[in-house]
Image (cartoon, rainbow, N blue to C red; front, top):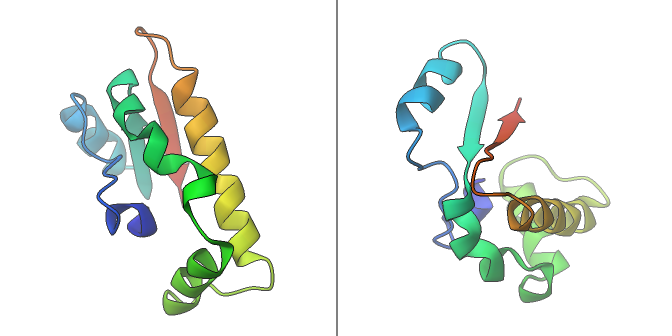
Length: 97
């Protein structure tokens, strides 16, 4: 999430901020992603990111491992695909922890 925030992709803010706050009182980090987040689809496209850049970010956070860059690209792909499939009446709950 911090990698995306550094690139002006804020998935943590939504019309369900109060609900997110309530969930986060009990769980580590939970994010409610809505169809409004589809505005970030282009920025979530793995083709717009470099594996080396993602690996460097993980390393800065102390989370470096051999395939971190590839894992980051896979995560971007999963986020983009999941958000793109959201219907207007759906919310994606992303729990990080």
